[in-house]
Length: 249
Ligand SMILES: [Zn+2]
Image 1: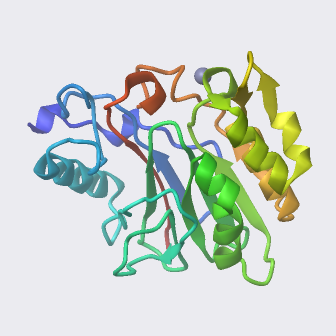
Image 2: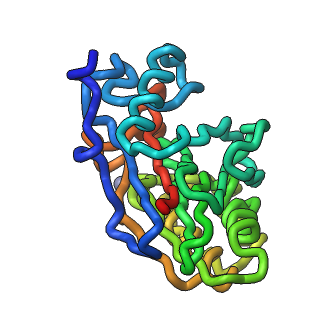
């Protein structure tokens, strides 16, 4: 099966340099390792794929990045809990570390992967922000753990569903406006009871409010880029790709 496994040269290295110690990588669905409906390279263990095959794919990611330890794969629950790398309880939507060789990772298929790094290169984290987690404060939780004294952070926003592709109902918009009326600018009317929501824009607003201004985005849409990324909205049962961050010595 080795030929069917993808090489990291085909994955996305973000054009983002918060500090020389920081490494980041985004996998994609290229390759023929996972059969339909996950076809490509699925890393999700909660989307119906064979768990042994997923374990092999995850081991392949570890080999490709060559980190001392394997990535700390989470059991994501659309919450706001953030754990330190290696925490025994993996039910969380973000992880962080201050040690080298410890890759933090989130899995997504439309939700927004958020990478954060201390600008002095002393800590990094990866966070999963769907609309629910974003609303409930996953970004604030992540920033609070990584920079408890407000140390400067740099942030990168990974591939997620774009505003043009992301329709939501009145209740989602109302929940965001209830938290902050300024969120209204991130919703475009799309017929009665429906809106087009900008997940990237809402994340930027939350970061700005938290005092984080060094924010870059890959500006990549999972739903538009069918050949590259998994999209739950587009495909229903499908795979998950990984967004990783770690520190080198
Ligand atoms: Zn799109």
